[in-house]
Structure formats: structure tokens, C-alpha cells
Length: 296
Image (cartoon, rainbow, N blue to C red; front, side):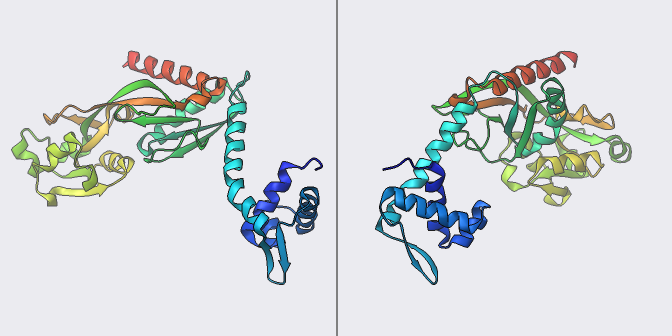
């Protein structure tokens, strides 16, 4: 058997999925004549037919069915190998993929700008989502997660900082409506809160249990929306202390609600433990957050 290009296998796999040379060419962004040449080349090298040719396209033979069944796992293993090799590096360059909770992604921008000022060869991609992104797949190099400490046998987890959440209102709101002095006075005010699936959070539950539902004038399942409604003066609502400090127009509202403090975790897969990008990003972010806390 002559040497076979790995790309020939991938091209054959795409033909098996798409069922035609032209569609596979579009999927791979190559000319369909190139697809045909590579398929013929692979079949000649293997000395076996992978496809039946007919007017409606290409249909896999029994050998083609084996290719279709086995190749996805091989592709995944090669992708993991590439990911591991790319993360054993000495220079700080290339793409750094970061997944983070949606309520924090916009606040991350100043830190990312400062990081790139130090390492201008870095290209950053942020995946903003409240879902957990698989780190083993390589979809992200780093995940910034809030809440309980993440667990996983193949994960390396480091605590970055802790965030406190309080209730705030705009100065304009306080000027017009004042501040609630007791729980019984909550119904004299307007509230902006997260939607019902967040009611299990103790500091949200405390307010919900003490107000009529018609006093909630704005709700969103997205905390940044709630924060913006507070900033605009729609009512009293929760916001992270670290974010509220960016808006001098906000007034902290003491509610005697349960203490809210959660950790922010820096998470990466053990395969990335030798990644210079990941290591430098952690050291930079940890130092920056510590400096900001010391200045407050």
C-alpha cells in the first residue's frame, strides 16, 4: 500500500456525508474535480471501492460504511492531539478562547485590552454563555465560572476573586421615591429583578417574599439587562459591587437581605497546563483583580 494522505480520508468522509462530489467540494471549499481526484487516489491506494457511483450521487459501499463509522472518532482524536501540541509553547501568541458567564463578559473587556497591550500577538475569542463549555473538546482554553467550585477529574481550578452583590437604585429614583426602611415598606417601591428561575437565589428570594408581584416593573433572565434597568432608574435591583462602583449615579440600598458572595473560578483542562497563553492569562488576571481589590 502506498502512502496515503490524511486529507484524502477526510475528503472521502465528507463525500460519504454529503453524497455528492459537488456538495462535498462546497463543504470543504475546494473544486469538485479535486474531490474526485482525491477519492480516486484513495481508492487506488487502498485497492478497494468506497463508493458506488450513480446518477443521484455517491453511495457508500460496505468499506465506505466502515469509513463513515470509524472516522469521526479518529478526527476527534487528531483534533485533541493538535490541541495538546499547540498548548506546549514558549511564545505568547495565537488564539486564546475564553468562555465566561454572560453577566461578566462585558466587564472583562478592559482586562482583555490590557492583556493584549502586553501580549499583542494574542488573538482573543470570548464565548459568552451561562452554559458550561467543554474544555476537553478545545472549544475554549479557559473558562471563567461563578458559583460553587467546578469539579472534574481532568480540570485544573483556581479561585480568582470573590464578588459581592447588593441592591442599588439610581440617585434620581432615590430622590423621587426614597429608600425602603423596613421589609414592610418594600411594596412602596418599584423593583427590577431576574426572572422566576433565579428566585432560588437567597438575596432575590428575600425581596420576592416581601413584595406584591405587581411591584416588579422589569424582569429579565439576563443579569446585565437587570443591571441596566437599575442604572436607568426603573427601580431597585441587584448588582455586583464591582460593577456598581463603575456608576457614581448609583446608591446602595441596605435591605438586610441574606449575604451574597460568590467566587469566580479560573478553569482549564489539564492538557493546557503547559500552555504559556493560559499561564500568562491567569497570572495577569489574578494580579489585576488583586490590585483592584486593594485599591477599593
